[in-house]
Each structure stands twice: as C-alpha cells, then as structure tokens.
Length: 532
Image 1 (tube, one colour):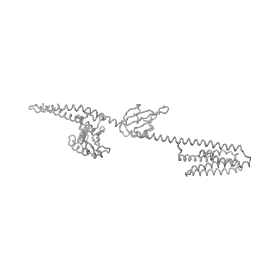
Image 2 (cartoon, one colour):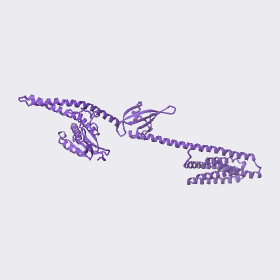
Image 3 (cartoon, one colour):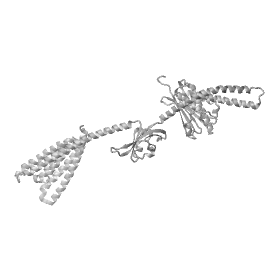
C-alpha cells in the first residue's frame, strides 16, 4: 500500500482541527447556558461553582481563538493537535473538579476528550488522551476521596474502565478509518491515473469518436472528431445528436455518408456504430467511430478514371490511327475533284464543304490522339509565372479573346514541369474561360489568371472566369472525354488538361456556383530545393 503523502495528512488534520474547534465552541456555549441556568436557580448558593465555570468558559473561548489563529498562521499541526488533546482533558478535569469529582455527572467529558484525541491523531491520540485522563481523574480522586466519604473503588473502576474501553474502541475505529482513507486515496489515485490514460488514448485516436446516451444525447466528442466536424465538444455535449449527427443514426453498423462541416465544407465520412452496454448487459447508448474518406474516395475516383481512360485510349488510339489513312485519301481525292476544269459552281461548293468538314474531322482525330497517347513530360525547373505571362501574351491575340480583359496576378511559382505541355494546359483553360465568359453576355467580361507557390512543395495556377458557372450535375463529368456543354465542342480540352496534369503528378480542381463563374486550380510539383 502506498503511504499517504504529507500534504494529504496535513490537509486532513487541518480540516479535523477546524471542525473540532467549532465543536468545542458549541459545547462550551451549551455549558455556558447551563451555567447561567444553574446560577439563576441557585442564587447565592451556587455562586461558588458558577463563578469558576464562567472563568472556564471564557478560558475555553480564548483557547479556541488562539487555536484558530494558529491554524490561520499555518503552524505545526501535530503540535497543535497534541496541545488541544491536553487542553480537552484539562477542561474535562476542571469541570469534573467543580462538580464533585467522582460524583460529577460530567465525567463523560473525559471520554469525549479521548474520542477527540483518536480523531486527531488516531491510536496515538487516543492513548495520549487516556493517559492524561487517568492522571487528571484517578490521581485527584485517590487523593481527595479519603478526606470526604471514603474511597469509591467501584465507581473509580467503572470510570477508568470506561476511559480505557473508549480509548480502545476509538483507537481501533480511527486506525480502521485511517487505513480505509489510505486505501481510498490509493484507489482514487489509481482511478485518476486510469482516467488520464483513457482520456489520453481517446484524445490521441486519429479517428473521430462520438458517444450517445440511451436518449440520443451526445455525451462525448474527442479532439479528432472536433477537427473533422468543426464542432467543439462544448457545443454538442448534452444536446440531441439528431440535428448535427443524424446521418450516423440510421441504424447501420457500418456505412458511409456525406457530411457538411460547421464551416460549410462537404466531406465524405465512413463510420461504424456499436452499442454501449453496462456490466449487466443493459443498453447505455451507442458509440460512433468515424473517419474522413473524402481524399480516399477522390483518389479512388481518379484511379478508376485513369484506368478507364487508359483502356479507352488503347483502343481508340488504334482506331484513330486507322481513320487518318482513309481520311487523308478522301481529302486528296476531293481536292483533285475541286481542281477539275469545268466543275459547276454548286459542285465546287459541295467539295469545299467536304474539305472543311474533313479538316475538322482530322483536327478531332489529332486531338484525340494527343489525349489517348500523351507525350511523356520532360520536366525541367520552370518559373510558372513567366511561362503563364508568355502564354497570356500570345492568347490575347486569339480571336476568342476579343473583348475580354485578361486580369493577371502572377507571383513567382517555381515548378518542375514540361513547359510545352503546361502551355497546352493553360491554353485550353483560357479558351474555356473565354468562351464561358462570352456566352454569359455580361458587361465587363474578365478572365483572371494567377500563380503562386503554396509553401507546401507545390506551385498553383488558377484560371477564373465570369461565365454562367457549372451546374453541380456536370462537375462530376467535367474531365471525362467527349463530355461538353458547347455546341461545337469536342469534349477533349479538359480531359487533355486532366491527363497532362495527372502525368506530372499534380491535380486539377474546379470551384463553381451557378451564376458566379468557375475557377480551375492546377496544382503542380515544385523542384526539390535540396536537388536544386
């Protein structure tokens, strides 16, 4: 058993000294009242007794005040306890002496002093009080009794036996109480350590942990849960879980669900629920462990898209290659027909339409081949801001950019990329943004372009338009081949952007709200500063 610390002993003894001081004051106040009653009833006959009793009461008050001052001053508590034990015995002896020694009805005060000694200093206090009581009572009785009515052996034996029995019983009980207190303190210490360990484990878990009681109220939310949901434990503990965590209460033991954080970000959570049972098997509530699967599901979607595109590209590349040969023959034959002398004007117009559409088909096949078999990036350290500035200068001369303001905010952004492929990415994004801005018909058409280093080993390129925005249903299919919302679009521009960025080990994302335009953000790897 771990020993009780000194601070715990001092605190306990201080508390007992305070309470016994108040008890002594209460007892002396009762004695004062009794003395006043005796004095009033006996008149002059009791003056010889009541006078000393008044003095004893006043002395006890003064001693109690001195004890309170000592406690406030913070003096040696065990020394004060010993003094109080001696004072209690002396007070009892004085009261008994004034009321007839062996014949006094206040002999029980010695037993109270012994009990007080056991409370203060346990067995040692009980033994000390017993010895002092025997000296203060038995000695004077043996000395004074022969001068009065003779030696009252029986009464003396009864009183002394009562003192000894009280000391034995009080000492035993106080020791049991002390040992019980030590064991309780040890158990409390162990419980505090276990509680701290449990709290540390629960708060260190990277998954969110939510517990509910049987009524569906939140009882706990750990730190990871606060970070994932954006909710603090103080906001939700004690409140119904349904308004904020209703998706976790569907009854499924393991499932996935969308979740909107307190700051409005939509995430994808996977969660597991299990019941909380008491030792007897009673249902106490349930616990929910949840994780943020948003990045994992996005990665799975990217991998699945890449696999589909790889399969599609392998088949389509061969098909496109086979199409180009007969297409070239057809275009050559139509060109020869157009150059034939004597061709009617209507026939010549038809041949021009055939050539124009054949050239359009050839461009589509060329774009599709570029998408299906992209060139392997030749990565070099490139200042993305300079590359973007050059590309914007060229794009400004393109007919699609007429009437559009190109706003730029180009901060230095070192990137490890293939400059030619990144120019192709930017050109496609600029054309899409310009076409979307033109389609909106808004006054003050603007396309914004920005670059910056994000400080996390990446360079960011963003293109913002003021078009009509992208409907939510279209965003999931935005980078799929041949998906387009434009009348004459091929649906390969953004698919090629995604393919090139993915080949660089980067990512492309889009943010858009209907009527508020769209913002495409490309994240590209930066050069290794150590290697550079």
